[in-house]
Length: 155
Image (tube, rainbow, N blue to C red; front, side):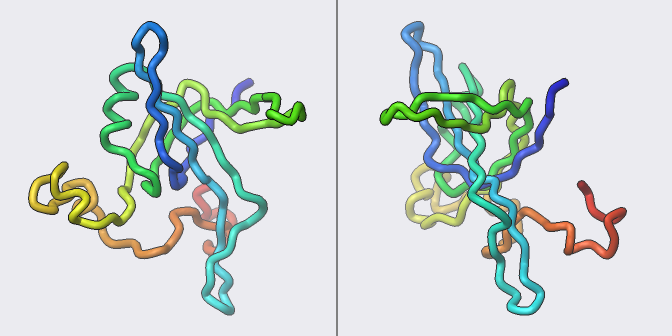
């Protein structure tokens, strides 16, 4: 059995690299830590420890995503969730969560200085960002307590 996961999170700097055969490889790390709003203080806080999930894209998809993704963008990726074991520099064993055979589903660009985007999008226009309403700092994750009953929750 495999666990298919739909993961939405804010990405760290995308890392584009090349294999010896000149194939493009893009490594993404998504911070997918769940959060919930405290109904008394109206403040958002993390539920549990930080959760980072990796995804690797290849060839043309890797090159395209490397051109359009930036640190802080909110992305949604689907794939088979696995836990990989690795050895740290100090010799201890570590574990990381990885989406195998990922499928990129979408991006909501982070708010950036429009002057930075002017060259890439002409005159400060940002077609992807302009297509989405301003969500401010509201996290995309929802918690079960935001729904009237468990049957109303989408998970």
